Length: 304
Image (cartoon, rainbow, N blue to C red; front, side, top):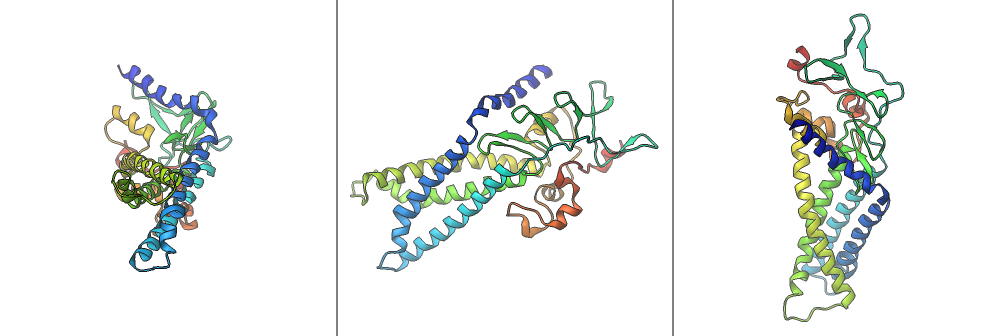
């Protein structure tokens, strides 16, 4: 039963290989949704309202919506392209587990051990890449290489999500949810007006674009909300999507250091950089886990 379950899980991940040919089409699709939304919110509805010569509260409200819309859109695109163009992390050439040559013991910080069915320890090794691999590293069949702290291969960003771009991916989810939720609420009155008997101003093209933008943003807001909640729970437990399945067969998780430290291993310790796709030089210097090769574990696991 255990083996069949494992095979089914990995078949799901291998399904991504069928989507390899999509490539940059997914990026164009994302930009297309952004373009439709921008046209509906800025050019069709709230841009003219903000520039209305009558002024008043309606113009102020429209201007406020536009400022918030553009801020979230800028953060969304910044985070998105940071995920797309940032390497998720690969195993350095000729990498070997850190060890104490005199005693022949592995460095407890690396924890580069796995256990077979007889609970015998052994170093992790990738048969496809024919090289040792660090702890929490997995082979991606789409990229054809091992990825540090791999979470999954995301077709929406045409890239693997791993140690070096996982934070950017989470910020992309966060700002996408906030942006699509904002658009859903501001376009809802226009959407409701479609089903009223009142005459709606605008051309058939602008009305169709507003209708489409509302439906798209509502669908994305609901789907991304579920995905965001799932990844928040993963960060709280210091695990990845792949590891969440793997640790179902085990008890305690060795890398769960508490919610605060788990959060810092993804977002860093510098609060100024928590909500932007980047890290401070101080965090990169004092936190080796941000580079994806070394991860501290619970002291009781190290002693065992």
